[in-house]
Length: 243
Image (cartoon, rainbow, N blue to C red; front, side, top):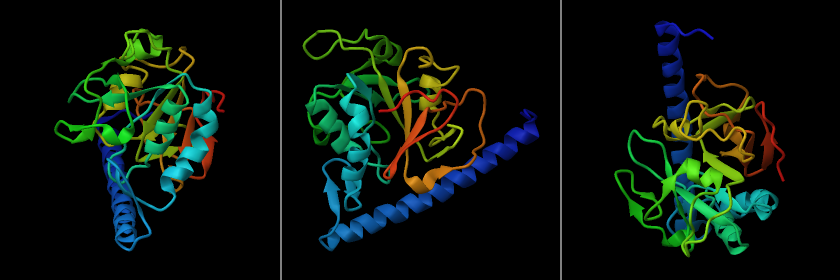
């Protein structure tokens, strides 16, 4: 891999272009969902905002088999334009799985807190108005089964990690939003790399955002498979069992 300053600058420019392109397409998707909602055809997921008709149900259906076998899931509360997993995570929690969601602090790895009610009840907090639990613990504790649940009993170790992304490649490379949160947490040089813990790492994006190749660096998080509204696609080098 070319690590010269010129190559790094070129890669950063490539990522910036890709981010602009995906964000533009997602804004268009969100606008279309809002227009459909105004016309009586869209869906407003409480907390998540307008989504395309059937989108939460399609992602929930794709994830149903995977999450049905999970005891503890690290998920996320979607931002506007991201694939909405609210229904899938609510269903996993109703089936008895512990669902943990990220808490963000600028410049630091993610912490994770337990979802104690429906996704729609999560408050929006912080600079980015992300829906987050009220308190949490480091990701390493969640992966190791060292977190306590609301009743004080230990939670099982995490077996499924759902990672949002603007795009993923067929080699498992992720294009994130640029904040570095997931790389600082789960990347090879992060605070809690999942390699060896047995958890499967699933990227989540729309089908059109799964691409052949993406620029990457050694510290970037890679995923084992990519979840889209059309199905689960094994990618990357670990190829953990899915489902």
